[in-house]
Length: 481
Image (cartoon, rainbow, N blue to C red):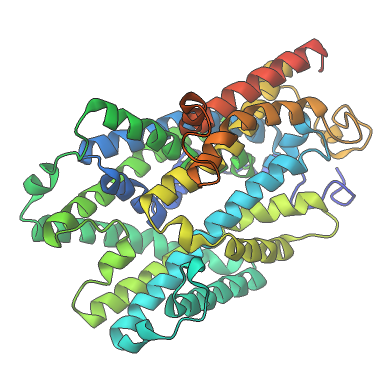
């Protein structure tokens, strides 16, 4: 197959059999590496801050990752079988041009994650500078108060952003050594932090004895279900673009078993560290500290703080390029394969990542879970439902790969767009819109009936089921093959 044309380039072309070298442990290692990051720690610690006790938090994280494993494996099937990436697979359901809709929605979310990771890395640098130069915290305000952005953290955020863009300029190969550093250092640092928490809190007993803040079961369930949706939403991005990785799989068994071993276990184990340490901070400091960067900044030794913050910055840089640049770069390339390459796509990701105001998204657990994670899950859940129903039910796992790159093929539909997929996507997103608008304060709580607002707490599940169902019925009626 030619790798040049309007709808194909070297990054979007099918992977040859010779290039499919990933085995079971490659996929397990991928998930271990992806899971060991600061946002995973903050994911679990935010549940403690929100009111759960240790076992409720761990169970919520485990269940969320067990649930998201299923769409992860199902969407990964086409990648392993046909060697195609996510933007190309989505052409089967959305159309060759229509595939830009899910690709762009997925890319925008990745831009948000890029911004969050960049903020974490920049804030780590700020915490280090603050130890040596306390005046950096007192710099005069230059941004509007509504932005919620201090001058010192803003400067280090910009510097760290520029470093990320420089790595994009050098190319993704330049990050290999940093990924090795992260794989070695972050588990060691996490275990050291766990040991410190157990020692400083006089053992695990006082930590695990910390009770839930919920007074009644109804209060617990009102927090649990949105939190569970947030846990699913955490990897809703990868559950769509997992074909970007499974296209390199030696077999279906390798991608299925590797993901089953790597995803729920590594997320749960690292979440346990976050839960224990966050619970310990309430005992040690008298208040819960859910951000590990803020926690590390409280250590008294300037050398220790500096070492920890530099390590966080480097490991965050490695994670950011690997997890939040490669995939959106492919998605942006799908817009115009003959014009947009990895470097250009990376620059686009970087700019959008700043415009999303990432410091606001992780300012508190409510913003992190209820605004960020659940909101984007309401967009990505419907896409996942459509793609899985299309591949497994409508087409019975049969794709004509060459036609996925050709105009006027069976995947061209109407001017390159499948109206049925667009209709199904809208049908799945719409029920969650009122709840989202209420969550961000556009609507008052009493403006919309409570049961409609409540749908937002199950956004990924609602969107997945409705869009998948609508798409399947419409396409089956049309007898599409």
